[in-house]
Amino acid sequence: GIQVEQSPPDLILQEGANSTLRCNFSDSVNNLQWFHQNPWGQLINLFYIPSGTKQNGRLSATTVATERYSLLYISSSQTTDSGVYFCAVGGNTGKLIFGQGTTLQVKP
Amino acid sequence: DAGVIQSPRHEVTEMGQEVTLRCKPISGHNSLFWYRQTMMRGLELLIYFNNNVPIDDSGMPEDRFSAKMPNASFSTLKIQPSEPRDSAVYFCASSLAEYYGYTFGSGTRLTVV
Image 1 (cartoon, rainbow over the protein chains, first blue to last red):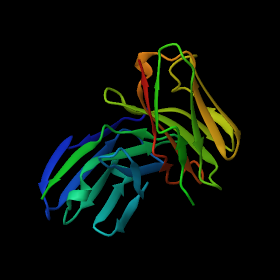
Image 2 (cartoon, each protein chain N blue to C red; image 1 turned 180 degrees about the horizontal axis):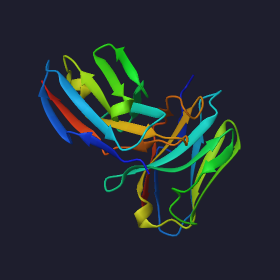
Image 3 (spheres, each protein chain N blue to C red; image 1 turned 135 degrees about the vertical axis):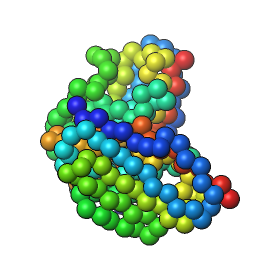
């Protein structure tokens, strides 16, 4: 099956800093999504992005499907950005395989 | 829309008891997914339905687990009998179709003692 690798596993930032999270996957995908799991455990969908670039406020994501990676950019980080960021990918079936996540802590 | 609704939010049960977790997907969504999250294994897909039909249940751990979707607005995940290793957070998610963004419910935290 498809393998998903996220880096870095942990990240500590000062409020206001920018960061880039990376997701590598082992095979071609038809589905790629980024999620944020907040400290209360809620999973929030950030982007559905099997290819191309999208932006939503301070967050943006780029997927280069031919090179099998995706990047999530967080600009001007805030303490509310803390939590775990998951990349999830899917191939020809409808199911998503989740990476192990990047744990982000933003300090005031 | 109220989003994906799961119940109960927390469940504590004794080993050997039957546990039923419930999920109401977003109206109009045709795909429904059950995931389990643990520290050791992360987020694992247990089973997913498309138009109320189970498509892939290869992630269901063993025969003690079963899932149903009797109609487009309701799904259950049942564990019988429950064991301590089933303790985890169980999430339900729905999407418009197989290749669209997922919306997750708030999850059910299950503790089996």
